[in-house]
Image (cartoon, rainbow, N blue to C red; front, side, top):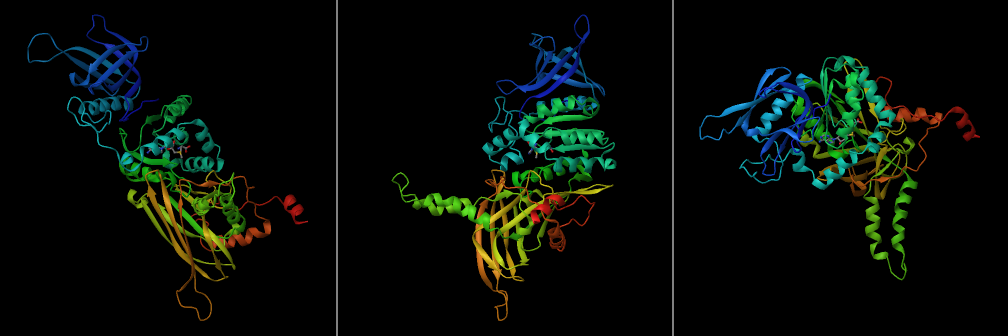
Length: 540
Ligand SMILES: C[S@@+](CC[C@H](N)C(=O)[O-])C[C@H]1O[C@@H](n2cnc3c(N)ncnc32)[C@H](O)[C@@H]1O
């Protein structure tokens, strides 16, 4: 079943209604579609098309019609007609009945009609409409996000190939599936909102788990594909309504018992969709309703990777040429060098590159405020387990599905089965030197920007160390500024494998700082191991 409700910028459309003429000499019924839209002068109109004809059977000024509820599936629409005389009395001489397949559609039509009449929807030009009504104020999303960025973002997600990329991340999609199906008790008989539904896959999972009704809200053109996927799975689809629009703008006919969403970007927060998830909670979730996932954690640890450092530094060497077709390029070398080090590196790295156990920053989606995500400030404190050159900070994240039956984690940790998020590393242009046991302090400061991402300010310092050292003094500091929106995807590297003999020491390192989730169901971080016949041949 598909009924796009609550969309503010585009017409509301109700593709399958039944139209019964009452005022014509011979009452009749026919399949039809209805839509609300503005005419050129900004007046809201209701247009009804019979499926057999391209011309509308009714094209009515909404201010001149009255809608009455006849029953849960039926409305009566009476249209005022000017009789040609000057009488003050209105005559509603044309009337027709509109029938709906479901109560939800019927309710949605009635509320859409009210909203359009009141001028709560319509084109948002920022100008008063021609008939004097003021347009709707900009939504929370439009206020903070740059229009061009949003356009490109939703264009990207409107393409099936990008949805396929996510669907083919079996670690991701499989974990969502398992988390939903193992926790049927949280979905059965419940109203669910799928926040940013994409292809609609999570809505279909929720319906499989017995959801009473799922509202799949998707802002991009993918909503049309989601409708087709839902319609093509009718036993589940009859309990799913796809709504095209932004979470920040759509209206839903009822509150949700549970939200499901996949709002995670690189480093958890990229794309700024977690804010949308929190807004959905505040707008649509009943008090004490559930969220799948309910919590996210960013893990951070210093790393040493000489190869990566040299690779990045070498990229700028091009600008050291004094005679490039007779031109000296060196004036731009410094800027090029800075530019390469302002790109966070996305790849799957070997966890043996970590020089200390990670620290964790937790985001509780059930209680945090949207504004808490505008700026994230994390103090860093580590103790190096080896003497080495530290090249920067490595980060990854996990999220928790806190189901009533099973608690399941989706992790993107190094050494765990690789996901399409990989891991993220911020590389310092100036590495720092540490000894085993030396303290590394610093700050990881994320500041959101209107292009749906963050500027990262990273500072790492080696503390004074050893006998006679100034207590709390800093020996060496290095800082860098990176744009999370412009990562360097370094994915041609072979996938990381960990030799069996190293697995134990890695697990000890990670577990000593709670890298393995405290609520564990055996699906948390597991380290990939080279099959023994391969590792044996490598060891020869
Ligand atoms: C990471 S994808 C997940 C898609 C799908 N839920 C899945 O798991 O395969 C996020 C989806 O949310 C949509 N989205 C992002 N922000 C949104 C918003 N403010 N309102 C509605 N949809 C949004 C995007 O267009 C995209 O399709």
